[in-house]
Length: 448
Ligand code: NDP
Image (cartoon, rainbow, N blue to C red; front, top):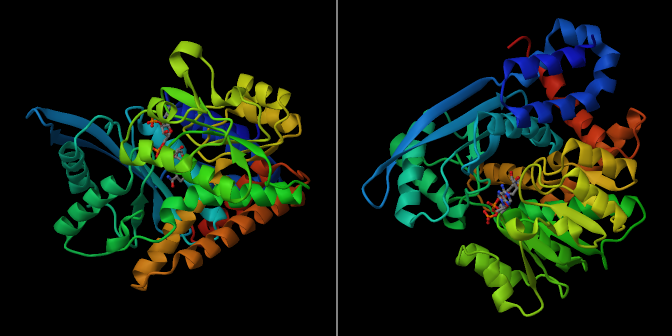
């Protein structure tokens, strides 16, 4: 059996009931096959792949907190410190009822390669909890965040592990967590990114993942003879990534016509009204029905009642920006039938392996999340740099660096794919380019 197959089997056996983690490992390993097979003996002797798929450290802890009725609630929290070969662990904190160890491991594993692709010195990690921020009061959110950080603060630090936001963890949650870290540890340091501007945050961090997604998508389209201007874009999600992807797409002359949340989706043929979307989602924290109520051109589709998704809308470019496994094989078929030319993942692993393969087989340009959404973590690393030098850069400076990073990422993965005879396969290119740097660093540092 080949080394790659052995390690895939091992991961499935050693990590039962973690399908998302298996999926992420399989996707990466399959695309690394061509690299590993050229060097199989040395990699096997050094157990490079076994070390890569086993986190350096996994923390699981309970988070007790008191709700507004005086009832004690208990959540489970995780921090997986996956790989520190090229820098301190870096990766977000997800707060969502679906969070479990397997989800955090899949995200942490992906993060290793994504962080490597940015060209910046950051290792891979991820964390979170099954706490659901929806419907909680500000006081309850603070109580949870403080209790969560009371334990987490023992294991993180500006030079060891620097968490950030993710689903359910926005500026409010990062603020409460930062305050608690400072109070317990007694140090004012850049231990979290995504902070508010008044206490060490970076301009353009809020916009970075969505903007970065569009910078990379524009470059991918350009290198394949297309222009983003004038394209109709389908976007899923209505959170941080989706909102700023929609905004940048409009600035670049494209027309985003959809967005979605966990209960339904909007089709707005006039183009999404970003100011209204921000008001509904960022200020009121309400459902998309409120968007439809305020916008005559918008049609609201209830997900449970209709079973439809944004991918049924005719578009040139599709940007899944909500969550994992939200673009399935039947969606991919629909996109191809509707003439879609490019899919770029704003979310982490939103496209299933079968859907990805179908899109690629039908000539759709496909940019995987670990490259396409790397703008968020790249700008987090720029926030770390600013914190270290105790300076703040202008919006234009950060945005300019972000754009360069995204364009470079695209060319790195394009080149890596070409080097191994897989031209145009950006999934393979991203995995190879991310892997090479990490494995070089791991090898240089010996068996640790
Ligand atoms: P947000 O919490 O801001 O928004 C998530 C959006 O997706 C919301 O509209 C939410 O709907 C929807 N959603 C969440 N879970 C589900 C689900 N199970 N089914 C359907 N819809 C769902 O998160 P972000 O925008 O920050 O993150 C979105 C994705 O991008 C995630 O995969 C994240 O890991 C990834 N990502 C984020 C980065 C960042 O900088 N924020 C960086 C890189 C990747 P509702 O409003 O109903 O909850």
